Amino acid sequence: MALFRIEELVYGVDDLDRSAKFFADAGFTPASSGEGFRQLRTVENQLVTLREMNDPSLPAAPETGPTLRELVWGVEHAKDLDVISERLGDRAAREGDMVRTVDPVGLGLAFRVMDRVEAELLLRKHNQTSHHERINERLESYVTPPVLRMLHVAYNLEKAQNDEALAFYIDVLKFKAVDKVLDTGTFLQSEGDIEHHNFFLCFRPDKAGMNHVACEVWDFDAVMEAGNHMIEQGWKESRRAGRHRLGSNVYRFVHAPCGGRIEFVADMDRMDKNWETRVFDKNPGHHLWTLKSSGPES
Ligand SMILES: [Fe+2]
Image 1 (cartoon, protein in one colour):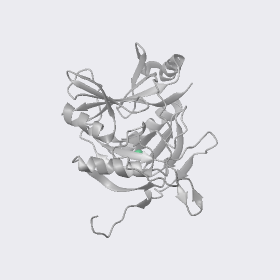
Image 2 (cartoon, helix red, strand yellow):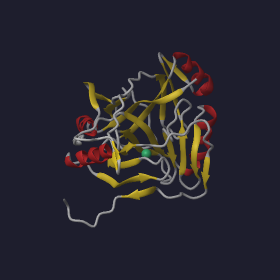
Image 3 (spheres, helix red, strand yellow):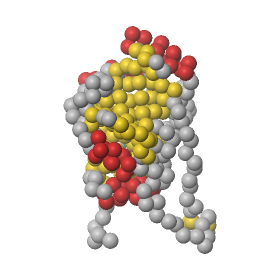
């Protein structure tokens, strides 16, 4: 049984066209649109669906305003949905090819068989001292790198909800706690995955709601260029670029009009079954480095 990846994020928004432009600017590909909805996809064929926030088909959310209304997880095989249903017991609702539930924080969850298209690997050739991979060849700008994958969702919750939420994700849905930071939150890895985390439950703001979705691009340059492009399009960065301590990924965060933020990421740690949960009493620090500048604008 493999609960594998984020398959779809469904947002309720107050301006469909503005939110669709935001995701298109970020490097998602428009997939379909119609009365009251817009849909875009990543290279690996995960969907972002945008609906009017008063659409009665949307699940409730623990916060008001534009926000994430349903997180759809992809499983490997149809029979995995039976396993999910069994694990959820009375909490599960079977609807056609989906299983639906609500987590203890109040976030709508769904599960369906994933429809994955593997992204082609792109590794830039690298030169360092006498190690030469790139000779008689120049680099080009990525300009607008595509979003390869939605890698993780970070979701806020009240501190009082933390124990129940962790019991649900770890004991019922079989996520693994990769890193537990006792004054901040828990980095969780789904059963079929190897990423440092594909779900992060954060109680630091002590308030439930969307924090961010991480969008993986090719590499460090692509993270920087994707952020630059968003700024050029008028979107606002929410913190200085840097590299995380837990997860090791490079990042740039941008405020999203559909609620929360998006995080451009590259080069995150992978933790396999040999990794043992690390517990930190206090947050070991958010980053290895963040961008500092004393300087004139170039
Ligand atoms: Fe993140």
